[in-house]
Amino acid sequence: MNQQEQQVHARRIEQMRRILGPEIAGLFNDTDVVEIMANPDGRVFVERLGSGISSLGEIDASRVQSLLGLMADFLQTTVSRDRPVVEGAMPTEFLRSRFAGAIPPLVDGASFSIRLPARSVYTLDQYLEAGILSPEQRDSLILAILERKNILVSGGTGSGKTTLSNALIDVISRESSNEQRIVIIEDTRELQCTAPNVVQFLTDDDADIDMTRLLKLTLRYRPDRILVGEVRDKAALALLKAWNTGHPGGIATLHANNPEAALLRLDQLCQEAGVPPQTNLIREAVDVIVQIARDPVHPAGRRISAILDVKDGVLIS
Image 1 (cartoon, helix red, strand yellow):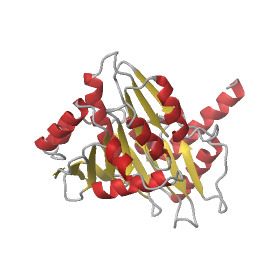
Image 2 (image 1 turned 120 degrees about the vertical axis):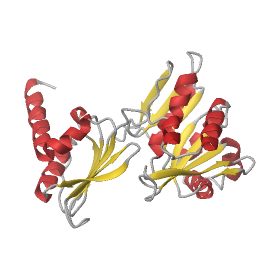
Image 3 (image 1 turned 135 degrees about the vertical axis):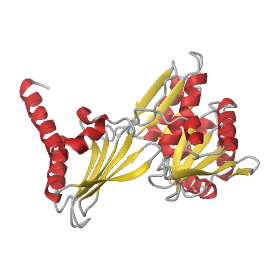
Image 4 (image 1 turned 90 degrees about the horizontal axis):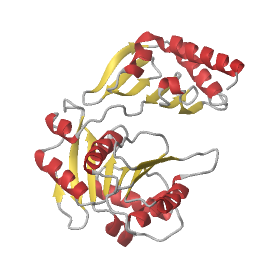
């Protein structure tokens, strides 16, 4: 950026911080915060690792509307009645957090949801201490990682799929050497891997580089493990083929409400590539499905509800 652009950017950042206010803006410095949500009624909620969702007061609708306008300007787009949605990565000063916002008539009042990137890893031992998983479940997941099984993390919206994936990747990181090359593919950077030999790819809508294209590129990068953020489309087929051609030990996330639904959802996504049902490929490529679910009565707000060994049908709940 030239000097004038830097000045414009600095003013925009200052405006964003002023609109959010010190309490909300300060959340970006809290490494436990994973989501900031402003509802149409003005109530603000915060989700933290291991402690669920809590209330954080209110924010005026006009401030939310102004923030959406600034985000639209930053993303070089507009927000209006005809274009009531703003989506994209926030500036680096806000950690490139994933922003999604909407204004009426889609919602009763301007609202937003900000997903912050993981900055600290909630380990499997911490999941155990919090009662989110059992000792048997933890041991089975660690064994699956060490045996280079392909793991699908399944769950509903806000269930903690990415946080759980990072806990599994933490095990990979601690047991990896220079000899094990890990490639990560995401839409936004959320997965953390501290292994010594890692390449991270991000999709790029502007350059028409989607997950399918990156999965094909990945195979030229000599991967030992292929780790993927949420699988949402026909890229599922490319992922299964990659996992099934000498690249075991992968991890990916999928939106589904139980392990059986995850297998069905994966097949549906494969068929978006114009192929017939891929039941055999799925059962060859996917070894384990771990289901995480929101649980309002649990102190941590979620729990590992099931782990399915796809090959022999054994379910650990």
